[in-house]
Length: 351
Ligand code: ADP
Image (cartoon, rainbow, N blue to C red):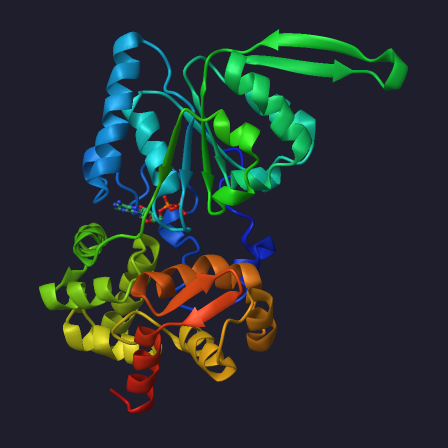
């Protein structure tokens, strides 16, 4: 597997502003650099926990492609950060016994960047483009014929001297990942044969992921502790793994061993002000802001009021609050639901 640009440029990512937030879903150390023997990443589809429906449709597509001796249709994964989009792409390349070249759309600035990537592909290889909604228009246009006809249509020379040249490409699979499906233009979206949403994980699946990872990094984690961590991980494996690493620090510093009990987990969550729903200070401020404003509030107003980045609120904070049923999005803005109000009453009364 070749890595062209292995990670999101986190410093440029507005979502990375709040570095101190433990329940954020930016990459953890074990995932950097992305490599196939990474201890945090499952190596085969079988090891990939949860999302049975998604896995079985991928398995069918993979087996059919292998049977026909063709490459897999272009694939688009969408969902929040940390849910396994990159992991799935690497797994697919393992299952297809091919290489996966990984890049990020923000690293593809000029047409020659995407041309270089495409020309460097060998037959059957996978090109994974993370945050694909950030591609610029010129790059997208080059991708259209590359994806559809495996051909590069290039225009050379300035103005009057323009010449068109076509170069045939080997057949390849493009896997795109995005957190913002709606920001992908429809001509690009339509060129993906398979489009899959990755949902948040159930507590049970997160618990399995946590127990597996604990085993890999040599932590002795009891059942109750793993359940508590899973409940606090906001449906996101990356957050689960991050929490697990922090409790390991606690156990090693305070107890001088690798045993993580429910007490250690509770201490960490209390210290980080994370409650039993996995909500932290930022979430609670968001909810209180809605309550104080009494009525639908626009995202930009909330962002200004809280001093946060609106895309961080939209893609990191809101989806989980919506899943809990605490807020809803309406055309006129965000509103607090009755469940959200009840949660805030419980917070105030200290329950
Ligand atoms: P994304 O690309 O969606 O941001 P990643 O694929 O980088 O997310 O996954 C984040 C982390 O969570 C990785 O360390 C990965 O190993 C782990 N992970 C994600 N999904 C699963 C899963 N289903 N089973 C086990 N680990 C997972």
